[in-house]
Image (cartoon, one colour):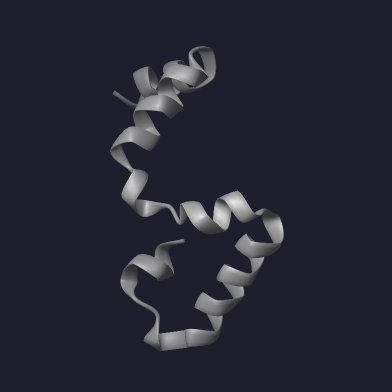
Length: 61
């Protein structure tokens, strides 16, 4: 299965990421992504400043 996923990721990237983001859309902060790299960096710093108070979902990213 890993080989199939890797194959599609490399050779059919548009299809792969279309499916990926369809399934995982809830895991992304779209507003921060749309605002650009500075907003994403600010969000990362915000999560890091929470330390142990950050949720498990925030710690993954």
